[in-house]
Image (cartoon, rainbow, N blue to C red; front, side, top):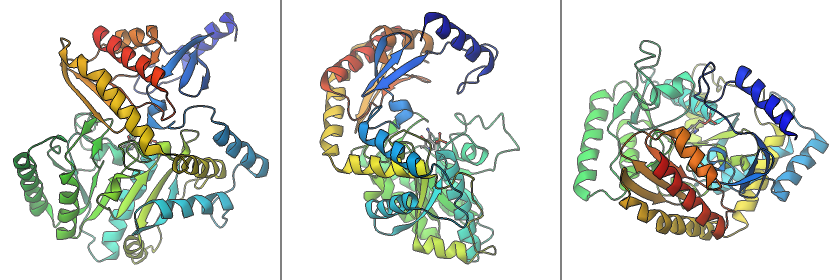
Length: 428
Ligand code: PMP
């Protein structure tokens, strides 16, 4: 692409295209991606940067992976899309089979949705329909915790952290859910965990007559604050759900497919409904899945409609399903745990010295995730510029500079990533 063509592209973009969480009239600058391969993006004519974001945590195998490219091309050669109402196809069935196999045993009924947010919407609709099906139509509210993030549609916003989800701005419009305190940190004391559990139980007791389900991101809260929390909390969610007949939903859209060191956190404590997305297709195209137990499916079938009242146009899109199966096979065909461990320990060692920098509040890692929390909001423009100068792509938010790199990142690239995070922290 010539410099003139690039300038024109960026000028049109600035005038006409909305970017995520960005003003249309006073947008911050965007970079032009002209290529992507392995763990690297090419910006503009030839500025290569190491990708610390995996395109919002989805591109676990990096870019232009030959196996994933081939899966898409092969499927294009057969057919790219057909409706899922009244029709089915091998790519959807093959993916469904894999999801049933690799998720914990009681999860066996699969709904293919077109994005993470939609899968959360579907999961919540299922929870309400299940409660109707088992004769509890008054159970309509979700119990969740502060600090969560579940997507940007209205129901998803209603269970996202009230500050992060801007509940005040949407007062009167969002469904009113029930919030418990944020789970204590991954290294919390037994006493802290017990105190949190007591509060959660108390809130569940108070609201049990109107609660339909519990929904949380298990083990790691992502876009709400990159907060790894005490693993013991998972069993508390399970117990409270069971005590009150609530459906437990784990939103593993960010944590699924190995990111925390577990293929799914749901292997530790199993929910009734699991949502996966993002890395499901290796970040190639949008696809998510809701996987439920048979009991949930039966409850829904007993509700007045008898069906899940949801059926998006691109449900079970064959291209997405084909590349998702290829991505799962690629992941499971390698020692992914060793890769996640390698990335996690190198990030932990590399980021630890940043604790000493002025303005740094905390440094934490879990799985292949490294987080530096500042004691002030990040100057996103300055931090991003500094990272790019250091050859790294990062997208800090709030008070956080963090990385979730593709699993294919090599050690030299990881060292560059750590240097870029340091540069962003110093500048931000
Ligand atoms: N849930 C979680 C935990 C997420 O991290 C996200 C996306 N960041 C979503 C839901 C929404 O997914 P999508 O952006 O695909 O709608």
